[in-house]
Structure formats: C-alpha cells, structure tokens
Length: 329
Ligand code: UD1
Image: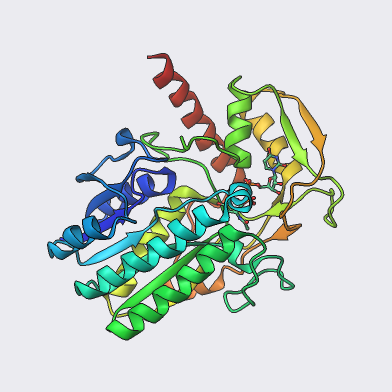
C-alpha cells in the first residue's frame, strides 16, 4: 500500500481526503497541529500531532522513509484575516510550504499534491477561468498560495519529482455517510454559515453586496462538493504515481450560483426561513468566479458525482444537525 502523509488531514477537506484515500487502498497518515482540525475527524490511519512548519520535526518524520507521497493541505485559509495579518499567511502558507517541499525533496519524496485556491487568479478577465489565466491575487491569502505553487514547481523540477496544485473553488457539503464534515472555528463560508443559522446558532444571514454586475446583483461562485474534491485528490495522486505530468488543475464544476440562489436553496432544503439582511460589499470579493473545469476531466478523467446544489446543501445540513447532536451529547 502506498503510504501518504496528509498535512491538515484533521481539517474539513483533509478529513474527507484521508477517508477517501483509505477507501481507495492507500495508507494515509495525518499530520496536523489541531489548530483548526479535530482528533475525531481522522477516521483512518495514524494522527501525528505536529506542525508542518517545524523543520526539525519534519526532517525526522520525512527522514523515516515511511512516505512515498505527500498531500499538503495544512494552511491558513481566511481571506479577511490574511489582509489583517499578512505575515501569518506568508509564514505558514509560503515559508512553511517551502521548508516542507525542501525537506521532502531531500528525503527523496517525489510526489506532492498541493492544496491551492481560485484566489490565485484575483479578479480574472476570463470567464470561465482556465488554468493558464494570469495569476493576479488580490489578497495575501491568494498571494501566499501562488508563491507556494511556484516554489513547489521549481523544487520538484530540480529534484526530479512531480506535483499537482489543485485550485479549489468554493468547497461545501459534507461526507454523504455523515462521518466527517466542516467544523472549522471562526468560519465564514456561505453554506456553512447558512446551515449554522438554520440550526439556530446565528440570528441571521447577511448578503455582502447586491450591486454586483450579475443577474441578481449578488456574487457568483462555483460551489464544489467536498466529496468530489476528495476524489480529485486521490485521482491526482494516482496520476503522479503513474508518471503523469505536473500541473495546476481547477477544482470546480464550471457553473456558478449567486449568493441569493445559495441562500434560497439553504432555506428550502433546511425548511427554516432564517432572516436575510443586506450588508455592504466585503472587501476583496470578485463578482464572479467560475472554473473552466475541462482540464481536470481531460487529465484525470474526473467525473463529478455530486454536481448539484441541493445535494451539497442537504449534506451540509445533515452534518450540521449531527454536530448539534455531538455538542448535546
Ligand atoms: C474565499 C476564497 C477561498 C477561501 C475562502 C475562505 C477566493 C477566490 N476564494 O472564498 O479560497 O478558502 O474565501 O475564506 O478568494 N457571503 C455573504 N454572506 C456571508 C458569507 C459569504 O454574502 O455571510 C458571500 C461572499 O461575499 C461571497 C460568497 O458568499 O460572494 C462566498 O463567500 P465565502 O464562502 O466566504 O467564500 P469566498 O470568499 O468566495
């Protein structure tokens, strides 16, 4: 069995990736400092409680020769926070990643799948956005990931390794089995917040801006089910292990929904008519971000299984109720 180190494996997306790796015949080991992850979220394999940004620790862990590949997912992810504390983002997402890639290369680890983001594109002129669109991030979060992508490409090229950078669009939903889901602290993701509001944990939802140049005036995003995204990681890893070429890949379905459409869907699926108020635009929000999703289909033969907003919200809602039960237990 191929042994894979998954940094951030106790987090929202990481926990789905670890579960899917195990179900696909890989042997995942999670490395997580539990800053935003949870012990209970690791459903398969060992959990090493460590910070990937600790070079001595990582040297010992990767020097053990146990791992053939790394899926590097651990990162800070909040756009707003990245503007307030950019150094925190560059330190973790760029400098930390550089150290990790260098140590991996030194110990002969030749396959790395890296979690990147649509935030590397900034406010693109192209719609939908292909992978070769110019990278012009408009916030430190996107810039920190763009630089890490470049470092990864250069370090792996020099060491004879290969890599994939998966550029996530808007990830939502939860494990269809209900075993894992989103429980990241201080969350600001739209679908997650709407489900928390429907569960009575927040008084209302706000729409950040109704004056965008879109049909209903609210921002449009490409919402991708976390289970499809988890499968994309496993497919990307297989591609590299089979000798496939290195490249960035968009992870989105290629069509978008507006904030208003998402909130209407959340109200309908949860059956809760939670209040929705209008607020001003949130700084740094592009009007429309939709992936050109052709390359991932061509290169990985990727076929989405949960490309349906109702299903995404239904799974997120089922998970929110399970979390409520876990809290009450
Ligand atoms: C961004 C990043 C993504 C990052 C995520 C977490 C980009 C391209 N993507 O996604 O990589 O992981 O932030 O911070 O930068 N909205 C409301 N009301 C709310 C919450 C959100 O109207 O209460 C709107 C936002 O204005 C946005 C949409 O919903 O238009 C989605 O927002 P969100 O879920 O926060 O994700 P992004 O900001 O698109």
